[in-house]
Image (cartoon, rainbow, N blue to C red; front, side, top):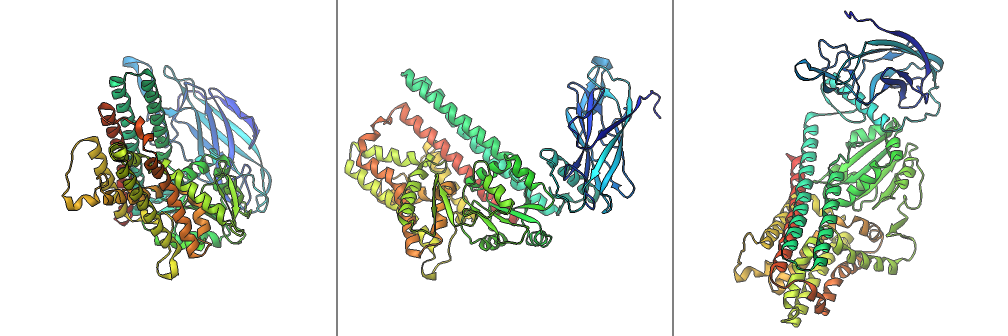
Length: 638
């Protein structure tokens, strides 16, 4: 029993007020979830919000694992009208801190900053109207030197409970997300099962797989990004050591810094959980949500799809989207194609198939699903419109946006599509998937530019034919010519773990060889498979290989083009992909026609060696990315 006196004060307030009650060292307010006002006949939560003064703590909550035996725990008690059911409070995790210094220091545990304590709540159907809720709070505030006298207060909140059919104003994020996660953790603790963000349960094996995939994804990106930073650092250090030109040193220093910053920024963004607001797609859960009249948003994604990650960042950066996804009548799911996913393929076929990134929204009204293909708007306005059930031409798949150009598949857009396909192919050379590989071919062309221009031209033409050949094959598969082949969605080949693994080993071997750690001399009969060899076979293989590498990074460039080809006759679809390959091969044809453009690159000496080493490290970074994708493809089957 406490021996210290308490201060008892009765206060009155209204739920949802803009002015919290200010107490000693903190303020307190009461909020409702999922709406800013309670609603009759619903299950939700009441959250006690406490904003604690800087440098002060409130002792850990009563009954929490962090509460110290000799400390005065923080207590919260809600008294609601008859018929309401108020569950046990869900406290945040308290932080450890010390009170005093030296021999007299005491270990303590408490809360700081802004915290939410969540009470699961069930409101009866006949509760609509004006009522009141009382809150009793007992506490002791401490800083790093002293603890103040304990206090206790009672606050009465006037509440207007909405009718069950009244429109609900949603509680905005991040508070809505905090409440939802607290309820999920409460469900998990009570049942001993893992809870998902919408309160549904997942079995341990699924949770384990998801955790392993997240760990592998983060490790892959950190290793790749770290190697990029290391390559830039090595480039700067070595350039400063041997380059005499101050301009060269400055350009390399600035360029290396910019690339390093971009790599770290991308890794930091990518390794934060992109699926925090989404649950894994399961046909039964999907159908249950549809039967309950809920809006269901499904994003189709994959760890090898860099453009899917960009869409996810845009969605999760939008407070409006997060607010919409947090509503009880909205379910957000993800279909992951990091590995083969037959159930996900079946759902994607319901939207007409096609490559990813792809977002499907099934409105609560039961109208046909709304489809968003390729890159979404920078403000995610198209996602919000789809969640509201607004069917626009773009969401119906009737029009597409490509680099700011809009066109309709219903119109005769053949010439424009072919022009855009050529531009997309050209721009693919500047994507992160392809850029590190280009120096391999450029250095090979440079080696012959002066000694044998004719040979350089011949190898460049063969390299370009390799690119065209690969896109020709993809065109045949995507067109499903004559029904002889199963139609292939763009990027679908990377669902095969063995393909990503094979590409990773090839790229890694090439990268390590360029760094100079070893040199393998292949038998003459096998030089056709050596992409760095001075043979027609090697150049052709390198063209094919470069084209294969381009596919994971081309969603924003190809989303409109590929979607359009799906509506066209097979011959036109094949021609479109072939023109795309021609656009990708175009820069190399220019370099072979104008070999003097390569004269600015270092031909020998430390500059040439450094260029190979840096590009080799970048190739190894790409290899790590592919090998990580292969591991992600294996894990779900484990």
